[in-house]
Amino acid sequence: MAPLAPGTTVRVKDDWPETRGPVHIRTPHYLRGREGVVVRRLGAFANPEDLAFARPAASRPLYHVAFAQPAVWQEGREGDELLVEIFEHWLEPA
Amino acid sequence: MNILEADGEKLLAAVRDLLAAKGIASSAEIAERIASTDAANPGQGARMVAKAWIDPTYRTLMLEDGGTAAEQLGIPMRGAPPLGVLENTADLHHLVVCTLCSCYPRAVLGYPPFWFKSAAYRARGVRDPRGLIAEWGTVLPDGMKIRVVDSTADYRWMVLPLRPAGTEGWPEERLASIVREGDMIGVTVPALPAR
Image (cartoon, rainbow over the protein chains, first blue to last red):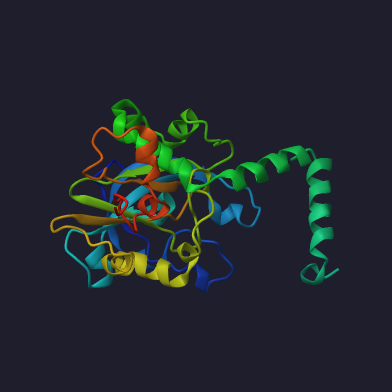
């Protein structure tokens, strides 16, 4: 996947690996399948999903992604946002 | 041996001995880390905030690289996760939460307050942030948006709050004295002490 430029609209994968076995995931439930906008790349970090099980952990790009807060919860105030660190392998083009 | 029934003191000693034997961490290094963790407190973050309020160069550095800005004030950051700083403005307020666990910028704020780890704070922080901070008496002015920062991965986040009116000409130490833990999480905003 090419680096995601700030402003790119992305979707968090609607994937639920926790239904398939023991996992350690840093992507919150409430954002699965939601669309957001890349704010910036924060760097690259060892994949926590492997690190947590003491497996060799490849370095994965980490992005700060903004989501409209009312769209996630169907309540709240227009313009309010959620800003969340999401690893690249959880993002897909929207 | 059932690890859940093992004697905690013995288990700790065994882990320490193993870390030393394998050359991963000496007891001196462990003691040093315990000391710096215990010494960390919200006063350290408050010193950074006060300096950023009066020194534009420091403010720029702090917003770009919180860890380096902390180190410039003598705050030990070795081994700490990267520190990001969120700038409150006249039309944007930040609130920090960790919905997954209890990620917290301990190097600059010390141990998190008990409620930061509570299920209620974590759930409401992302769903009803305005209702949540209203319980601290924080009501944002009309037109000010809120951005909730869910600390889910490798960064730790602190808020750089707005400098309150009425503090013009104050020296750095006095400014630092009014910055509270909650101001750097975003549940409160700095206020002048009641007279």
